[in-house]
Image (tube, rainbow, N blue to C red; front, side, top):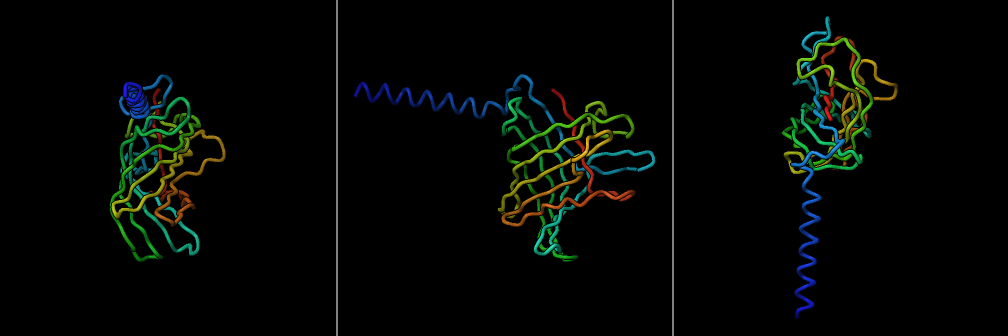
Length: 203
């Protein structure tokens, strides 16, 4: 009986320690971690380029390509210095799905976790930033886990190819919703206020 009780105390203590290490990232800022805000942005004007929060972006599925999703949103996350996942997330936005021009559903979504964050570079001077400090605006990509208001789950991918960014970063969003894969980010077009994003990062 004594041995069993000691074992129970040990297991309980280890479980509590594991829980504190796992969930502690929500409230404790790890050394070297990135604190990041992401936004699907709205351009107030293109001349000069001036952006704020509150934009929208589309992504397209395949088989058939008439399936699209429209997303708005913003949020924050803490990316551990280890590069691993994190539950230190906030934010969400709205979703609407389409088959051609016909709306097939709409609602809200919420971010539930960070899967991957890749920083690329800080913006070079140029645009006017009405969200935050332009010196903290940057390019990169993130993969977030999300929950939709209709009960389905999925991922949201946000990519920003800002001023001075290296090649290879797709600007816009991708997503999954249940089994549907909206993996083609609709590219931004000159003078069209859609499919643009930004990150702001601090250490």
